Amino acid sequence: MATGTASPPVRVPVEEIAAYAVEVDRAARFPRESIDALRFAGLLGLGVPESYGGPGGGPAEVARAIEEVAAACASTGMVYTMHLVAAQTLLAGTNGDGVKAETLRAIAAGEHLSTLAYSESGSRSHFWAQVSRAAPANGGVRIDADKSWITSASAADSYIAATGAAGSDDPIETELYLIDAGADGIEVVEPFDGLGMRGNDSSPVRFRGVLAPEERRLGEPRSGFALMMSATLPWFVLGSAACCLGVAGAALVLATDHVSGVRFAHLGTTLAELPTVRARLAEAELRYLQARAYLYTVAEQIAAGAPEAKVGVLALKAVAAEAAIDVTDAAMRVCGGAAYSRHLPLERLFRDARAATVMAPTTDVLLDLLGKSMTGQELF
Ligand SMILES: Cc1cc2nc3c(=O)[nH]c(=O)nc-3n(C[C@H](O)[C@H](O)[C@H](O)COP(=O)(O)OP(=O)(O)OC[C@H]3O[C@@H](n4cnc5c(N)ncnc54)[C@H](O)[C@@H]3O)c2cc1C
Image 1 (spheres, rainbow, N blue to C red):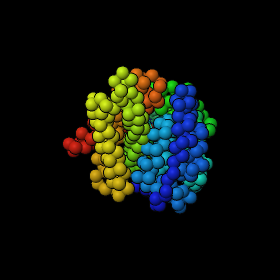
Image 2 (image 1 turned 120 degrees about the horizontal axis):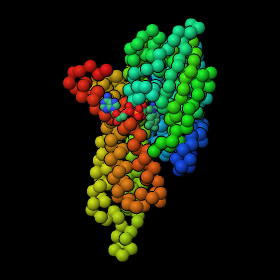
Image 3 (image 1 turned 30 degrees about the vertical axis):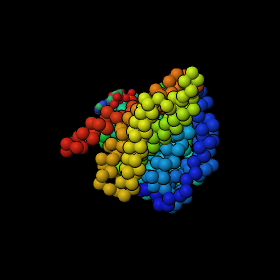
Image 4 (image 1 turned 45 degrees about the vertical axis):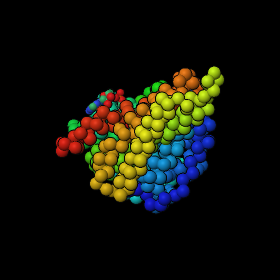
């Protein structure tokens, strides 16, 4: 897989992003200011190689940047993850010129936001299977599809959209196309109203008669599944895990500060002086440290193309997603009613942390795939 070339010094504008996090969550609105801050910091092109005008950067740099963004605002973290994963998928499906290369150059210049349009209402969380079917049209294809969730649906400039290959009835014989979000036939059906990541704009989108000339197809005919597995999945797993650990890390900092600061006036002690509180915090720290160490282990495996990356790609997202749930749960408990109310921003992190387990591939699907891999069974 392409992993970029240079290792740029990455400075994430965390203060600018954090400044909008509460309002983005309350209003369930797209974090436009935060995405602009990433654009001005030159980070929308992270991972895009210098040959396309990008700063380069491999899996570890991408994961670190996403972690910091998500710690400041999880909705922005999700939008940023989907954009960077779309860019890597486009990179893998490009032969160096035409509209796909132009789009990569625009991404590198910070002028273009992209995302993934894989999930369909028919195949639900089985993103690798498409119930929509392309039809040949004007030397390319016509796409009719009901996409169930597209992060940044209303704000993105393009979607990397999956659809079943024309002439096949196999749900995993698919193709990926670079589609302009403003193309004729595309309609964002309704705004996203979710428990967490409330600003990520993961809305259902209807494709009706959307035309895609051949030059917009990523890779060879019927290569959609292979590209999803070789390009999208590794980068998505890294990004999703980094989001989870950014959220978990932020929750730990908040909880530690709170329990160290507040006092029982009648006892003259802090919450942190309670052994149960300390033990719960310490257990949460262990979960966090283990998952975070694994994130950067898998990032290295992916960058090196190591054989262990096969297990890492199946395991990492589940490890990080479940750790984020446990850590934010512990943080809520030790902070008591102050966390249950909005006195502390912890309840937002608790809600945000729940997204990854239900995002495809879900934790339960990953357990099934990993179990199949361990026992020598076909994964799909
Ligand atoms: C915040 C957010 C952002 C998203 N952004 C995007 C995006 O940008 N692009 C995109 O394409 N999609 C996106 N999605 C969609 C996502 O990837 C899933 O498709 C979606 O969450 C699935 O929801 P569902 O109700 O259809 O799940 P269902 O498929 O109905 O799953 C319900 C339950 O069944 C379990 N299950 C299903 N199949 C199996 C199996 N084989 N083995 C064991 N258990 C199984 C699941 O684990 C889950 O617990 C996003 C989702 C979220 C929450």
